[in-house]
Length: 238
Image 1 (cartoon, helix red, strand yellow):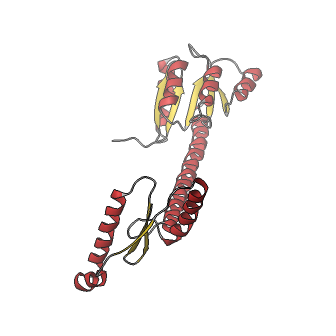
Image 2 (spheres, one colour; image 1 turned 180 degrees about the vertical axis):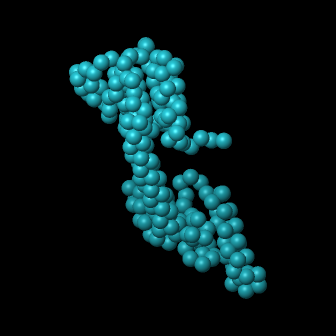
Image 3 (cartoon, helix red, strand yellow; image 1 turned 90 degrees about the vertical axis):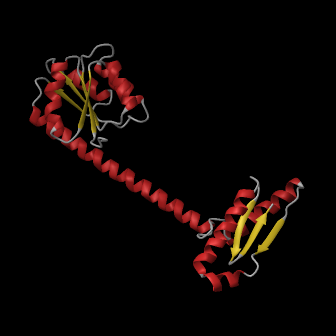
């Protein structure tokens, strides 16, 4: 089964510290992924999309500050909130350094789990709201694409419509005048089409129109255009 819960990355050199944080965080219905080094953390941020990263300042290979900077340089992860944790005594300069490299919070060990859960819950709400905004934006873009296609294509056959013919014909005629090339327009009409509708019904008539449009599309060259002009009338622009 695919886990669709938001993912949280925890980075600490000591596995026991990771387990101390992992268990309470999982109560928030998230997937917690752990790393014991900066290099591993960096690789994971390239592999997964995280809602939040919790990074110990003193980790091997790449320290927490440098690790955060590298994570945030990735276009896909540049907006991921980062919380630093440290076993060192509170040092204002270290805190400011954490904020300077892009962290949103800085916590000293021993971690108060109650406070941590409240902070993480806040960032999860932001993450979920951002996801909803992105989904709404994608839905609007898809709707826009559908409307644009409806404006330029025949909704039955999928061929370009009469409005597109008016635009394309003008463009292609100007191109031919400029480059002194040929332009041909073929107008086709399906004979006795009314008899098909009267005998077999309009649904079968639609099937015939679609089948004919498919044959046109299959035989077109890349530079040609096919239009449904109206009813059973079609135009090829070559």
